[in-house]
Length: 377
Image (cartoon, one colour):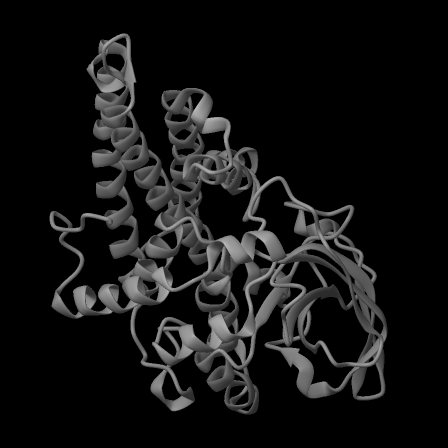
C-alpha cells in the first residue's frame, strides 16, 4: 500500500477518495486482463460507478468537477497495483480535450458516458511512419460538402480495441509541418472505420493496443473538435497533462518495485542470512529510498503547479523524463535483487519490469523530452 502520510498536497477528501480507488483497483482481475489482452467493459462500468473515471469533468456533464489531484490518485493506485487498465488515458487525456475544445453538443453527447464508463475512448496520434514527430502524420481529412472524408491509419492506439469514441488527428490541408492539422471525433461504428489486431507487446499485456484504419469515413461538420487547422496547438496545449500523468504512474511503479525488493530480500536467505543483510543489498535499497524521497517531493511539486495552472511544457517534459527513467531503473534493480525469481512471471516484479519499458517511449520518447527541455534553456 502506498504510504501518503508525509505528503502535503492531499487532505481528508483525498484520503476518502483514495480508499475508494483502492477497493475498486483491488477488485480488478489483473491476471485475466494479462491473459486476454483487454479490460472487460464490466470493469469500466464499475470504475465509473465508483467515481474513478474523469474526475475533472464538470458537474454539468455528469462529472464531479474535481482538480487533477484526484486524477493523480487514480493513476498512482492503478500503477502501484501493476494493473494495465486504460482509465487514466480516458480521464487525464481524452476527457480534457472534450472539456477544453468540445462544443456544448459534443460535451453533452459524450462526457456523461465517459464518466459512467459506458463510453470508452481513445486518442489516435501515432502512425506507422510518424511517432513522436506529430508533424509527419499522413492521415488526411478532405472536405466533402459541409463535412469531411477521412482516410489513413493509426497504430499503437491504447484502448483501440475497446473504444467507442476516438479523437483522430488528421491533416486538413496538403501542407506539411505543424500547419493544417485538425482533430475529429470518430465513432467506431462509422462506416469505413475498422480495427486491426490487438498488438502483441513486450509488456502492458492487459491493456489493448490497436491499429486503426479509416477508409473514406464520412464525418459530418459536428465531428470537428475545436477549430479547423488548430489541432497542433491543441495537442501542444494538452500534452503537458498527459506527460504529468505518465510521470505519476512512473513514480508509483518505482515505489512498488522498491517495496517488492524490500519484502523479497528480507524473506529470502542465502549463505545462512537474509539477502537484505548483505551490504550490497542494503546500500542499493538505501540509494533507492533516497531517490524515492526526492521523487515524491518533485512529483507533488509538479502536480501542485499543474493544478495552479503554472506547470510549463518544459517542466512537464522534465517530469516525464525523470520519473519514467527512474521507474525503469528501479524495476531493473528490484528484479536483480530478486535473483532468478525475478525472471519468473509468477513474481509481480517481472510484470512491473516488462510494463516499465514503454513509459520511456509513449507520450514522447525520453530523447524528445530532452529536446523539448533543451529548447527552454
